[in-house]
Length: 236
Ligand code: PGA
Image (cartoon, rainbow, N blue to C red; front, side, top):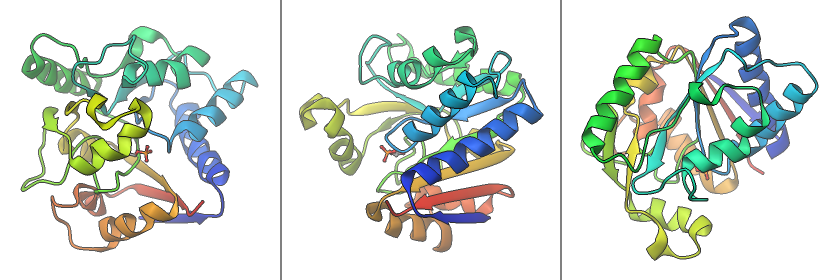
């Protein structure tokens, strides 16, 4: 594991964007696993800046996102499809049809989970997976549990996750209680993993996840078994 402790959020974002752009330069048709949340916004901003300067070309890139709230569609400002469009996809030259986010409004959610995994498999797996980490140690929306769930699945969100994410929804009651998330198998099969985290509040869980026992009670702890993981942390 490579662990980079940097001083500022901006430095974390710049370093993460550096690794993502290196991936895309080396393999223009990379399959990028992408994440939502406050943490990656700076990384996406940096990538957009470099794209505008002509330094990165996303025209052949395929992206696969980790998760989506059940019940929210692309027009809902709190959906992760909306987040990705506004914070990245609409500002770079990625082909929209090549961007995949689970469909939270699918009529048959179980079928959507199967389709999502099948698609990842057909694409040949993820080259570089960007991850944030939740305060409860979740990655994607893989919440603490008795087991590591392998496949894309529907989850009941943890109270702490609902509370943390209520900052975007105005009230706790408006936060969806369920989500669809990629499972651990697709995440762990990614050739490279890039985990970013910032803020004092994330320090304890990050320490537990990276250096404590490997347990599904701290889902991110499984990442200790990945052969090619880079973690970038800034206390800011
Ligand atoms: P955050 O979320 O980037 O908004 O802190 C991270 C996560 O929950 O995975």
